[in-house]
Length: 365
Ligand SMILES: [Zn+2]
Image (cartoon, rainbow, N blue to C red; front, top):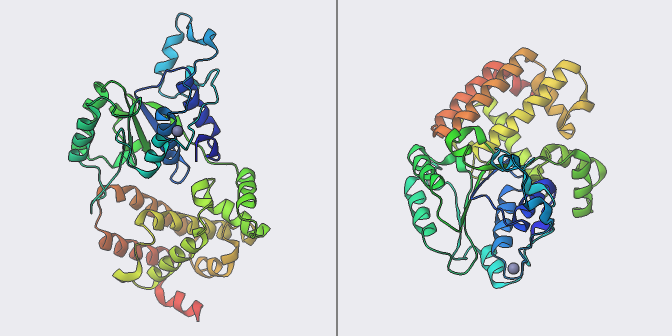
């Protein structure tokens, strides 16, 4: 694939293409936006375009290159959305076929590095950042640029963040750093302020519905609408054929947590973050039903009877309170919480707010 094949991020891509066309590529970019929205895919295809053997790095609209006095300041703004790179952007893309493009796709290009959290703690450690710095200190072997993509950049621990900050302050020549995060607020402000930010936004529901109809001909109207809504405008989620299965599994775990907690309730197919995201959707539907009594306003309309059954004994106030409590727990997942203790505590909170286990058992029989 190439940049032109990425769905729903036309603005972000236009900005990047504009930067390449004008040969004004910031040494550090920060892609911010929800999980599953196309940030990593765009970063990889941006790297392909930068190092492609068949890409013409053209500079057009030369009038814009002679900047009037004061115009330069625009380029140092935090967001590129209104910056100069977006002006007069040229359609520029990778060929997706040359040896460089193929190597980047396979993850074995000597000048392109993709790092992310690893190990039990799910953190980006300082040793990884130091290795990256070392790799970036050499001139490119094959490509025009050395490109480092730091996925889930907010997972850099304190030591790694400080080390990375020094790289940002004195970036190696011919290197481009692309930070990716769905939690921009978790990154050090001093890191954010040294990067040019590009925002990735969700697709509107109509566009998502069209996309699904094009890609999944077998889906009927109701299924298309359900997946469009569940995906929250994130194409990566919507095009995942397992989305509804993942929802059902997560809801099932949550229902079981209302009754009891056992360690084996959760397997690796649903991450803790995903489980807490699905919990919010579940509670959203319960609160909407509780407040309005209208099943047609539910996102998970196919699970109407389940949602009604669990919501019936809880108060709206308690449901909203639980939603806030679970949201706070999800934020703290970044701080290495013990998984079993967290699930136990969550299970207790759910039972406290939504009702006693025996009441739910009784309703299910
Ligand atoms: Zn190519």
